[in-house]
Length: 239
Image 1 (cartoon, one colour):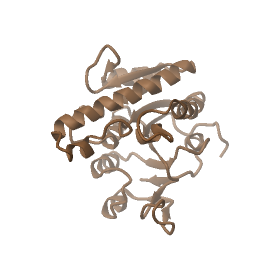
Image 2: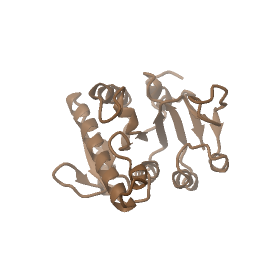
Image 3: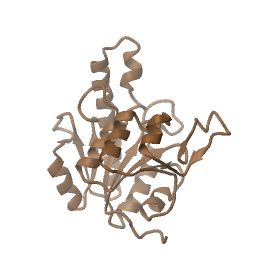
């Protein structure tokens, strides 16, 4: 399959907050943000409509902090604010590259973002703007994986792409276990039954119930994202 010929009109890309840290132990590495934006721009430039959901674990992780004594609802809202900070950093990178982008937040904060409205998000995409969805679902107790699955279904994306530090889905952590087996393809129910940690169960169920395919891939390898939207077999496909 020739790269550069898109097989999908609209995708949703899920980025982890941790990926934006680079070699830092905390926060945002501007170089990593720039490199990630460049990869996305390459796909955007061939006419693919792109929505992005980013986590906030590089700044604040609600579930982990709730275990330290912060009320879970409060901790999750703090985590949502962290995703807004990451989204603004990504938007700034796109703007510097001449890519029109909009941040839409599930929590209203009109001074820095637009409130999330499904029809308006689709309109932005149709007008050639990249949309960054922040603040998760706007509700505590739901992960940004679930937010990614939900937004993907709402904007009628044809593919949900989850960027990770490894090149697909394995039966165990390949970083800790060199003998871990990689899956080329895996079904939704198999991923749930074997607890493969692709996404949380709610996110996988949303994808399954709406027949939304998912590709898990290594975002750190340049060109991988373009390969996926061009139809190449990169990473692991769930569906």
